[in-house]
Length: 253
Image: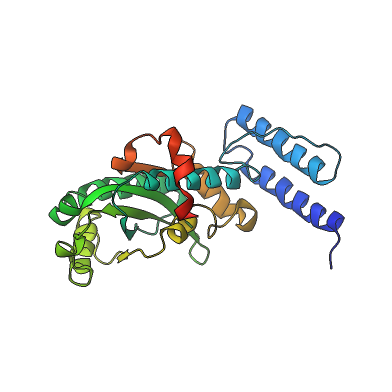
């Protein structure tokens, strides 16, 4: 069994490697803050300091998981305040693209999503949504697959308007039309365990910066550095969370 010192050293090596990979990809001042955060984390693991500086940057391998957990709690609180408790999970793939076309493809996915939500079946049933942008690196092709995961909040009795088995092909056809493609993956399904879905979109199932390769890491950073959010909210979920929401979200835990 590895002792704590050995585990710490492996962690430090990964953190230093990530710092080397992101150098030059972000503003110098922000990079220096991340370096300070990483250095403090290594010293804290070694027992040399008790408190550390947190840069709170989504590019930071130390702080990124913490920020995802905050987003998770934000989503949970927003859903707690919504009267409707019926949800659908929709996944929409973009095209496989090279790194130089990644940012444009992400923007095109978002535009196509806005158009898709104008379908009558969504206008009749959807009251709000949470949209998450995710990027998968295809190692064999050295390409990136940007896609969307969307939690749709739908009205009670939505099955009168959306018959998933029959509507899925219609939605897929419209998605491919907006994307000017033919066979991009699309899926939509009812949600039984909303907390499991929230965890999947934010923390539990996502790769950490310490688990991905250099090219994937650089591509992801380049694609998001000019974007304010990887998560966005629409409809009734675009409203701010009230202060009392924290006390009322126990049933989602």
